[in-house]
Image (cartoon, one colour):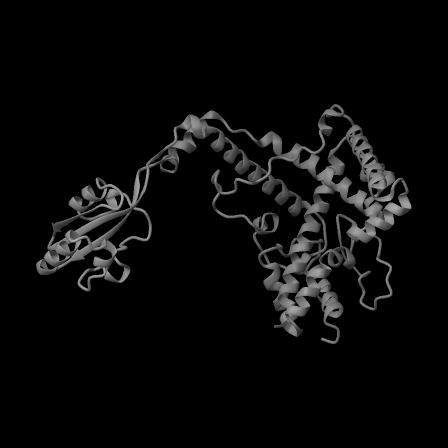
Length: 407
């Protein structure tokens, strides 16, 4: 497969193309929803994603200063300028990992920033998929990493402009506290030793670790300030959801049953005689004349309710028998039925008062997902960055040279 074809396939479900720097000649369009939330599905019910995290609350910077305090640019945090952490990598490797592949909001993107964190993954893929077969999985890994970096930097840029002076000062204080913790934990008080140990243990030094920490705090605060005001689950919302999903919380009794269904009266008498003689129902249900002989009477692949049975007499019997009891024959429209109950699942009745906290939590999570997706979509549409396709194309070429030299 040609290089451009591989990238098109990898980026189709991860990066919306044609939305980069002004003047880009690419016009391919991909739903931004898949870029912003690649796991998005149509199911947004409370039970669809019970583990979805709530709005981040790592730093309560909103209480640090009044909202009308003037904002300051990112450069105000002079002690920890993230641009310092994105300088070209110094290496003697002939593969150009220090290559500039693009920019995001004016901040350069170097190949090593995207490829280094997934280097082990790419190396494993190169061993598993030699030669051209490596291109597709490598393109997917690169696209995933690139998508994460683009969105992270867009959020950090917006957060830095949005926060006021006191809030940014609070973040600097938190970063300094974190620096002291890292020096104490990894360097026994020595910054140089902490640097060496962090590089050895995590692959990045003290400064980059602090840059990552600072950016995560910015992301948490911005996400909280942007999302939380839009979250409002009312009592009416909860009641409406409960009414719309009543069967989920109030399930009738279900039963697993076996059936013997015969067309001939002579067979009916034979089966009745064998059952009355104590022969196991599933063994008799394999009678060659029974409609469900092949499955030993298992006519349904799931528990049923009375309405699932066409014969009223059979349904009445099936839902009045005790576990493992059988009854029959019942005649209905020329067929002769025998029925046995093999399992009983009691009815479930869960009133609103018992389900309301779960419903509220689920509706809240759904609102958080929707609000998060919306603000990320806006950031992406308004951001200025190199066409993701072009960056991914360069990165894939570099990865091919690094992990499959000579191809």
